[in-house]
Image 1 (cartoon, rainbow, N blue to C red):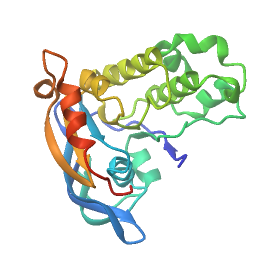
Image 2: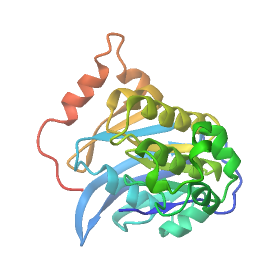
Image 3: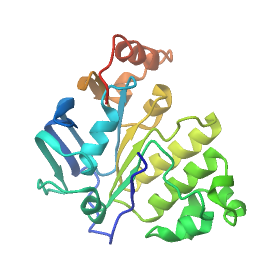
Length: 252
């Protein structure tokens, strides 16, 4: 899936701590077959909520349902107090920024052209990732995977979204690039953005998250504050991984 959404005209920002996105009893899937069941979660302005789980646990389906790309089979999604069902482009107008697990860039266009397609100032993206500037004149297809992902994230954050859904930002990238990306996500939350992050690297996710939900077979099986799930001896990530990587997962 290559869907991406850039927010429309800026709405009034939510107050830090105010619930921006909420799901209650959310069940969703494909061709009438559920891939997630009874999901309850919320994300507030100014926080990062991490969704963790094995491949096929339902993380991507959860994001797609919240974004309006997959219609719920049951339950409700409330977005800025609006519980009506909305499509992805309508959510984007409400301030949603969505980065899917595939590169959300146009490979044949240059970096500058990609930035200009966003609704924010290209200069703001470069403030976040100044290392991109010398590469913006060439086609994005000639950039490294890390540069492409920084470009995609920078373009979305430059548009000042109210909500950011990010699916596997770090997939296949070097640790230094992953740190740059997640630092930018944390900084966006600190400025009031409500973030839901799907991340394969548990330790890195715990490092920037405020709260965590662990999915297994389409259901939330563990939730808590990230601080409570970290451990002084560094084994908190391993404990979570051991919990959710056991057993088979249903397709998402």
